[in-house]
Length: 306
Image 1 (tube, rainbow, N blue to C red):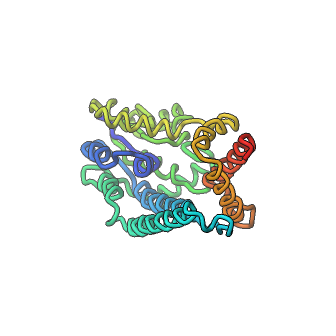
Image 2: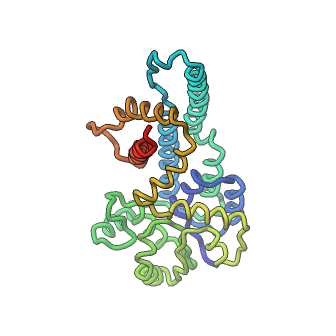
Image 3: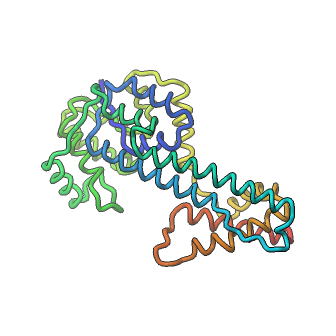
């Protein structure tokens, strides 16, 4: 029977993207006797979990800011007054959710995080400690450019995890990970694993359900569908400019001319100032998403002659 190593990026994917996370994690937890993990993996999950929460807080805070100053021309309109009431309600709800998220940074207040940690810390799951000797081997691996290694990272997380697996696994191994360094160097890693352990690296996959099937465990239909959906969301290619515009255009077409004007004014008066290219601006997914939407909405407004 093979051991299954589930990488941090898989757990983080379930943490932030799974729709029915508790049932999915409960199903995974039932197979803990087949799992092997490392202290590095556990530390990475704790770090990345906080990063996910912080990004969510920031996104929620930024997306619910309505600081547009209404000119006297429209200030007394019933619709304007109603909009102000809705704005305050949204801010209030947003504040409540942000308070919850801040509390959730404590793992004891995070049910989903606790479920994942319980899998990693399950007595049936083999845990590999990271020694100074393994760190030295990982550093050498990094310097020599031997896989698994991420060229764009100066850290040695992948390297030290692999060294820990080489030193501790005494059965065939399955790796569940989204890191391309495993799939791109599969034959090299297979050879090294067989030479170091006398066992086989029999599968590298992005899906836990495929790992279960490989060891003779039948995954539920729900787990298969959930992982297929997450995989689609992760792997879908970015739309080209015209495709993306046509996609956004369908959303804009449901807006009234007045709604479009208000939205454009809001984005140009407040959001552009926030996202302009000042020192310290972070060009992340949220940054580019904003500009794509703003550019598309301006084009749509011109086409409708608003």
